[in-house]
Image (cartoon, rainbow, N blue to C red; front, side, top):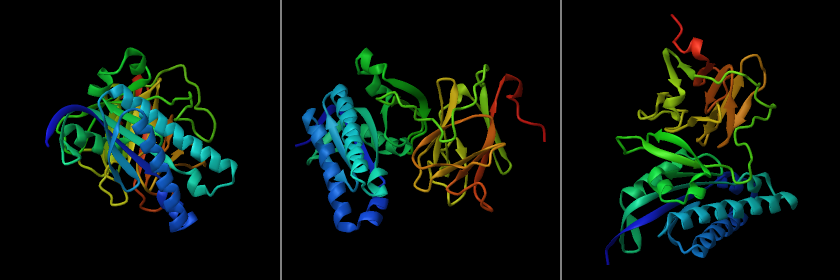
Length: 315
């Protein structure tokens, strides 16, 4: 029987399982992944949701209420966090400790047929997950609007993100870290303090130079022609990294399988991002899929701008 209903669609994707199979072998890694997916399915069922199908290392689920879906997403993140913490205490392999979860949710009209679900809300959630960083939950504006005021305050707006198959950008919100952790901290200490809030960021790749002000963020760096900053190199993912504006600073989040690398000017240190984030400050270079030190690597130079420097440099 075919039904058309307003539903909350959830896609959840477990990252890092490839390394898990390399470290543990097929049998043990399969057991860990199956157990983890089971925890996710239980969190969904506990909140009245229905798992529509499993998708390799992830799943798709639907809920009647966006609030229940949000609670389930938080529960899934917490379940994985406990699993990884237990593994760390017991000396588990690096593969287990590297497991991460991405969640994307949308709300809208869904066609339910033969146990499966179809429609625009399904397509948006399925493609939005490509833009989620490690342990991040992204939701559409339609879903965010249906949450309570207290729940809405847990999110920050990412404004419009270009999603594959959509002509217009999708207004997206990101759930803030549940325990107050700073997802944009670097391993090399705090970001240098500045009394002046940046006005924009300049990106340069080969002969392409663009300046983005804070109102234009977030922007996606990637090989897709729909990316705000397109890098046509085979080593670059379609949606490789995302630059956000949050709390007065620019944040780079890696979205790829090959990683991103940041080297700040004046520092010999190289920051490797694997589905994680860092704060961009000053000037530097971003290697997409390869280190900036490698010959012919796809490297985007960046410069955080203040009001006097927002115009492109003269050639």
